[in-house]
Amino acid sequence: MKTRTVLLAACAIPLTAFQQPDSKGRIDFELEEMKRDTLLVGSFPVSDLNQENIKIDTILPGQTRCTHIAETDTIAYNVVIASADETQGIVLALLPGERIKVTGNMQDWQVEGSKLNATYAQIQKACRPYQAKMDSLDKIITEKIYKEEYLPTWRQKDSLQADYIRQHPDDDLSLFILAKIRGTWVDELYPTLTERVKNGPFAPIAQVFDENFRIRKIFEENKKRIVEGTEAPDFTLHDMQGQPLSLRSLRGKYVVLDFWGSWCGWCIKGIPDMKEYYEKYRDKMEILGIDCHDKEEAWKSAVKEHGLPWLNVCDEDNPDVSLLYAIEGYPTKIVVTPKGKIAKIVRGESPVFYEYLDELFSKPESDN
Image 1: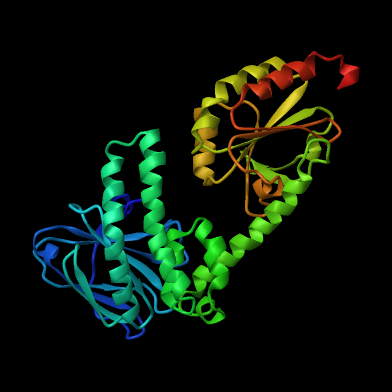
Image 2 (image 1 turned 120 degrees about the vertical axis):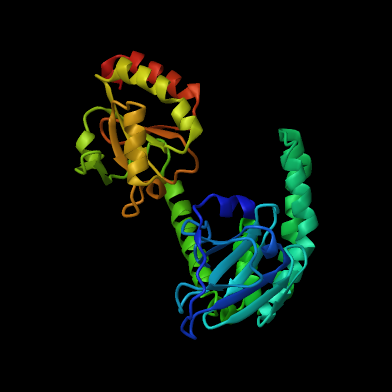
């Protein structure tokens, strides 16, 4: 997501510049754009890779100097400053107790007080032509342009940053950059970083990567077990009323496990057909909608908005049923037999699922 888009996505609140304890990180901005533009400063912990807890501060026009202070004195932060007139911002790493000064302008800035950020500034500037091309392609994007121009340019931009990581495995900046480019780069480059870097100021990033590797290993192990003909793992989640509901409690009829989310366009698109087939075969099967990657409020709101008449539960971290069933994409529908065996797995919104139900329930009951 572009820097400007990220920053404008949140509600801005006034920037404060009060006296702070010496242990908190601090950045003094003296940028030319501050004289005439409103600038936004976003900050979030380095471990928050998806920027889910970003805080936005505002620098109003007319100022020549402003100070950004970290919220705590124990966590390294990402700090991004952007102008409403620019599609590319300045990204900084703010460490506890660090004093940084940023001068110049949004296109050519200088950093004092941080060798790491001074180095990263040069890398960002080298990446800007690639990002500028991607921004221009955004305005005329088509599937062909995306595949033939946008993706290769994106790859070039990330490759430039990956080259730095390859050449500097014992540099803290390498781990910070890796958290920005991510993707398959993590598989290739994270193992090459030294233990000193992984336990250094950006250790929270390393902890996220380590946890992701752990989860992926579990996912691959589960994937081998979630195949047609095997036992469907039992689980218990909470329904709309907050009551526990287990898969085992539904034994005796066919159960369709529908892994979906309110954010999933194809899931929503398939609801009318799901409703039709639920009415058609509800005496022979039950649907258990398992909402994934939603907050409780969004889940309950979507169930009510779309009038889902079947049983509904929300996936939780403990247990994480989408991980238990090695769900690779949404929607995924898994048909479980009355005796608890996996009969069919259909990924995506496909007519194959409905054809299977018609075939299944057209058989004599003794064959099912």
